[in-house]
Amino acid sequence: MKKMILLATAMLFMSLAIPATAQTEKMTPYVSVNGNSEIKVSPDEIFLSITLDESDTKGKVSLEEQRKNMFQALKRLNIDVEKQLTVIDMSSNYFRRKSSLAVTQYELKVGSATEAREVFEALDAVKISNVDVVRAQCSKIEEYRTEARKAAIRDAKAKAAELAEAIGQSIGSCIEINDYTTTSRPVFYANKTVMRAANMDSVAEEAYVEPDVEFKQITITYNVSARFLLNTGM
Image (cartoon, rainbow, N blue to C red; front, side, top):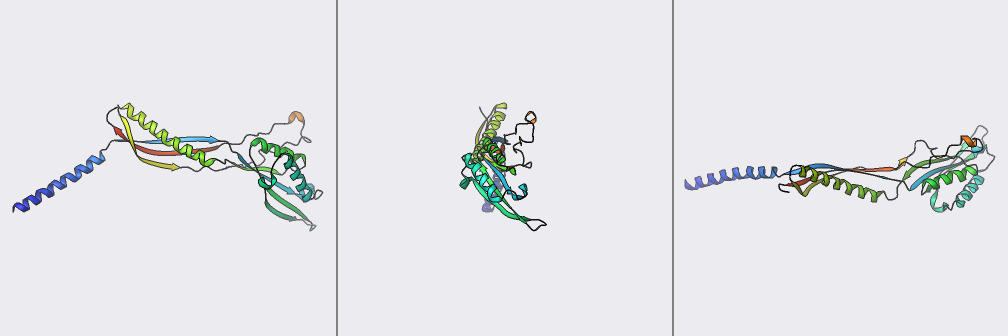
């Protein structure tokens, strides 16, 4: 009988102790905050589409002649055509007379808005006007993402410290971090003629408007949530 009473007492003690422990854990004081950061970077990789089309001159200037003029114009700008220029597409357009006029599309990578404008002007000078800006991106985007991520958690820590100080407390260790990553993407241009050079032969000098040579910046944003322990004393 005595053993049964002792066993029942021990079980009652355990049933009381477990909820008390769980309740203590749930009551651990902490502050939960969100942290944000935003970084804007200028693109340093700008991609231009260059289309050579015999139909632009009604077949009077061959594709080979256009290609030669393009290469010469780009080399005068010290552009490495072997590294920066790639062929995207080659085709022929067939007309009612069954004549074949060739078309070749290239993609050219340049490193700045100024260089892109120089390309527009140089190609326009040799009667190649089918040039468009298609996209712009940043070569160091991963480095900027890391910077933005760190800035977001620092922002969360500063907010937590500010809230704790307002109630006469301070923060301790960070016990949880949730990273809500956002992916930045290259800037694409719906208006492909954003930097098309003006034709000075057909536009009066007083009506000439300077082309916009600035590209939209790439925005990198990061959002995190974090929990910090609360210390009861300052």
